[in-house]
Length: 255
Length: 333
Image (cartoon, rainbow over the protein chains, first blue to last red):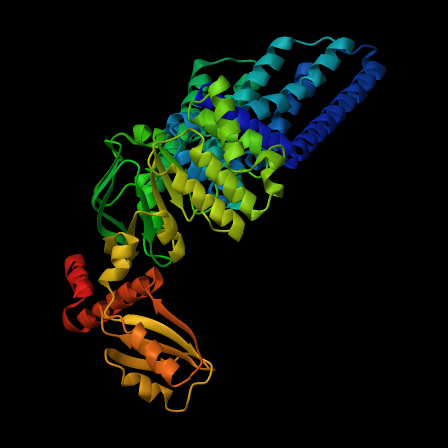
């Protein structure tokens, strides 16, 4: 077992013996399920209306269900993921186990990678469970799988970004509530930057600000477009956050 | 095994440790003695590469703490002030995690785990969650963690805190048994502990080393007079005055009610026989006569108090800059 494996195994164990994952997971899945139900029923009602008026209906599930659903999950992730990441470093510092990690013969890269990988796996597990929604729908209807799959790719990239922001916030403090709130606030700020960007329109400043926000990049993926620029955005933002986390953890020893 | 040269650690304006220098040979057990906030934990954290010193160098087993921290960390077993345990893990899971962090695997890992579980008496709790264990057990799990990879150097920050008297004795025996094969630094503010397990004591106060020697020599060095405890059942009113007349006696104090006295005599002169003769011929009911050797506690208080006096003196005279050297000569004079 490499140090990263060891860390991941231990972190997963810690996640699953605490109620946090179960509560967060249950709430997340409940809300996503409820939203899916609402969109599907709404779409069904629209279909019936169209049938009555036109005698036939061509319903696009991709537009009416999945795009709405992916947009909503984005917001739920913003609320939920900081709760998953807040403990990663803050708890170690509070309970003084941080001293054990920092005096063990493992490198900082491995420590940060292990911490991130563990929470990312938990997130993938939760996201995987929402896959039941498209799978169930596929049994009863016809839709284009491609935008659904790119939407999921978008969710995975978006989630990774959110988690890395949360990891950084957790490294900055030993108070878990502060860590959660800082990551929530920062992500909301990134979100709202998209609004500022569109206000400024097609000016250079507007373009830069829009690029910094994750909104457009995610929207492209939800619409089924895979653009290298979007992938570069997510991957570089992720590595920037992990790098900053590395620096912050390293700097704790100088304090 | 450990070589510390002139390390200083500053937090902003505050100097936690100031030009601390000491070394430790293989197999030696050294106690760091000092009041709370003296800089013991800071020194240990520098040695374990948890934090770098502001100035100076520290090396463990020939590896520099700043330049080769991973090599140093591999060779150190560290028990911090608060045992670094995960409450949500069982003792077994926790030790397996720590062992793997140190690169142990397979039979080497299980072997080390059962050795430490046996050695620290954790057999009955190995499948219980650490969060549900008592303070004493957690402390022992912390020790097991430090010993698990059989490191040549052990750094134990107050290893017996939170243990009951029986466990304290067991842990001291354990530390003594490690001497010879392991180099151990332990910090404590419990003085008998230092006397009981260590070959060498470093007394640290206000971030500076104020004395360093064997426990015996430290107490001998600071003794200016012999002290004798005396209990008389039928002490007359003028007992103090008459005792004072015995040759070699410097001072006599009543030491509590009921004929308890504390006598001070000249250094190197045993006056017990004379006292006994006076007490017996006068029929004072002598029931106890005992030479009190100065305990490390007295040494410690004397040294730390001496430091404060010096600091206060120099405060008014020429500021705070106080040389370690001068305080040492001041002590031994």
